[in-house]
Amino acid sequence: MLGMIVACDRNGAIGKDGDLPWRQSTDLQHFKNITMGSNLIMGRKTWDSLPGKLPGREHFVLTRSNSIDDVNLISFEDAKKMEGWIIGGGEIYSLFIEHVSILHRTIIDTRVENPDTFFPDITGLGFNLVEESDVSAGEKDQFDMVFQKWEKR
Image (tube, rainbow, N blue to C red; front, side, top):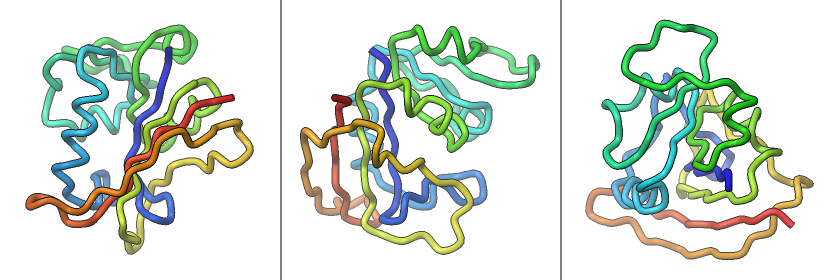
């Protein structure tokens, strides 16, 4: 099963200046719980934004470069055949959106000013919302959020 996990604002923004435009500890824990023990598939910019390898998960990077040390490089064709989670960024989400069967989306209750990266619109792609829960901002969160689980028909 190839899935996708993303956090976006109310307008679908996922990034600004090469980083997440919010600090949401509760969502990071949600991400960890869903992805633990699985493969993470990402683009180079997402890899560069991480503090390093995330414990308990294998990392695979799609890139046009062959100069990334200490991480598995993978092609789009090979990644489509894998089990794991697509974790970004914007170009990678757009590339894989039609090839995933499950989507975990966190909607952060904000509208980012001048974002530069967006999650693709899933309207018309065959996804059905199967779970949704409102989550109030915790002590280490900037905003309230909504956890959603979508599955393809």
